[in-house]
Length: 457
Image (cartoon, rainbow, N blue to C red; front, side):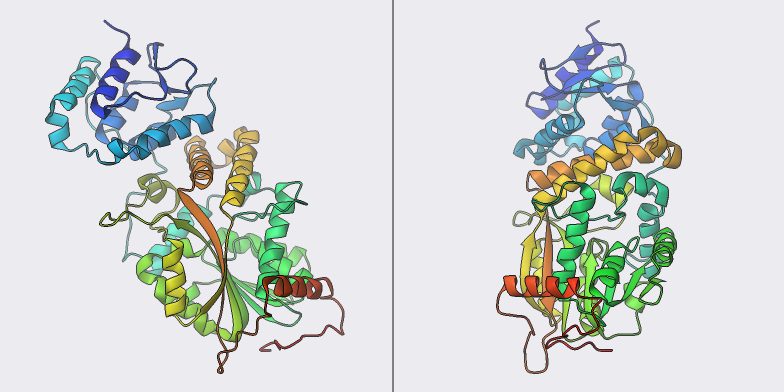
């Protein structure tokens, strides 16, 4: 009998119609594929069975998360994922639908015959425990949104501390020339947001989806604002409140376990939403935008920091990543930047500035992956091997997606115009960024000039 790896790769290449850019090592120790290419290890027949039942991204994810499939010790994770992405993004593969017609065609029959000969056919294996399977309630109802957020964020603050580092910021950093570390870059990102919002002492800031409180802490400490942070993650809120107390900022920062649709006490001078809008959903996005508009005072600014996808081809429906939807961000949706800007404008905002940070997020994700790998035994002890594998896979794959422009990240600065249509913004970006920075540095001075944007307080 020919070696198992050679049989499998031959049958798979016959079905796909193109050579695999990977080496494959089978459970019998055999290896097939181009020399020097990164390698996947099929540890058992169940790995193949998962791919037969769920060809593509979901089957590969289930096999990796369960441990049935491994990255070869001599292979680089990013090189493996890049090779898989090359196959998945090939136009010939994107048009391939492995339905009954494909399975019963000549190429499909050859693959099934090989699987039968190798003993890999059988009942569908149960998905790993980390996969979301049962979802209750209407899509993007408050109950279902809370469950989705809990799945991702309530996995343990200690685990996130290993991945994110001391900044505890779970969004794209800002890699200025002065940034020498992830913590420096995250500090620069927090400050960039505060400057874009034009924060000044005494203003009210609302941070929607505040995470572990890093932005509101920075804004209160360096810009003298009164800040409210809201999140529907119980573990995030608990740690954020502790961090506020430890910083001695309880008189200036309030952390609430609260949905963005439940905030009763506007208006605010500024609203930030960083890495939260991806959870809103396209059907609810206008409601989200109108809600934030209503919470802002006239002349108030919104900073919306959001991942964007590339537009689909005409007539092609949007298909969320099945791995991301079932393992990482249940019910999350990405929109093109043009759609986001349109919805904000429909809500009444004037969009004043859009800045892409795509390359910055790729660098950030690579640092998070490095942190996870450096603390791998501790991470596994905290959340289990399967969940640690989920985070490693999604962060590394996302880094490549940002690098290759398959997804992007944008900061959109919008304003609620005053009754006469005035924005209250200086004429140039340089003016409003540098002016806010100077006010931030002088936030502790009692004689700070509040300029032409008095607080709503």
